[in-house]
Image 1 (cartoon, rainbow, N blue to C red):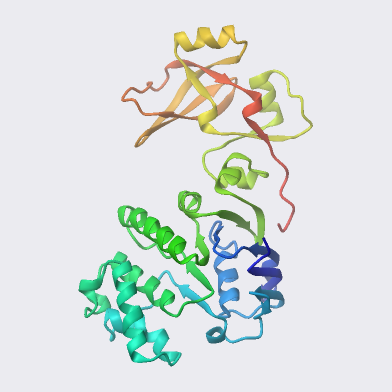
Image 2: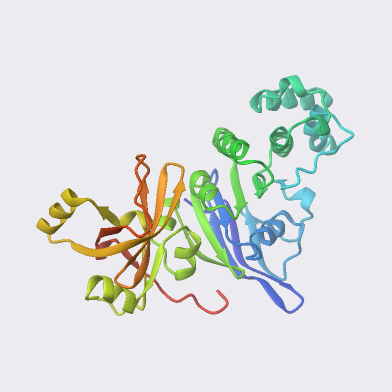
Length: 347
């Protein structure tokens, strides 16, 4: 399938600082792509460049086979939802939703009809006459989303729209956003620094660092096959190990790589029965000592010292946990490790 939105060599500098380093990205129609990365990596700047709110220094933005670089924001057929919602405080919910349509000259009857459809979709029909200051944060965000959808954009841009909300509302609203996106088959770019949010929402994740996309793929690919130390460390509690550390754990390494990553759920804590089974199967077993215990809801995260290496281990919380200083055995499998590459300077 050909790209519906294509970024070709997008470059941006602020002073002498490269903020975007010739970014290339292809997005299919109806796809939800998340730009994920730490603060300052360039993800929000890239979104603003697509919207036309920030001028680029080089490259092309092709939308539906048309280069839109020289078009003003209002003519790009792009909708954008900001972290701050940016609702008009002097307009009601219904008037906020209709505002963009009114600016485009849509007839009043059609504006009202479309507004009512969107109010039903976001479950705020009873708030049509309310003002933004009388709404909760989650309700305001839904109105901002409906306002962007009302003008029927070709692409929807969401710039960390959930970061100001509390955890429970954030989880509910991200599900609603995904449902709405699928219902409209809306080509969408979502910006976040939250790994869990990116993995749950996305068709594809683009992990950014220092103004470049350092790895892209499906959520499963990004999580299970990190290519660099940066990706492995950013995507969670991977054990990123040097070659000497891997040698101590496995006693031999059939690889020229200098860095390895092992997921915390791939290291298995063994009770006696499991230890005997692992011995029979010829698996690698290492003695260790519990250094710390963290209860993360349905997961218990252990830090364990084994073979002079500190490992992070995640196990399901069954109501029982090991104590600090307690001895334990862990089962390791070299085929669960990922070989990591050095990230190129400036990448």
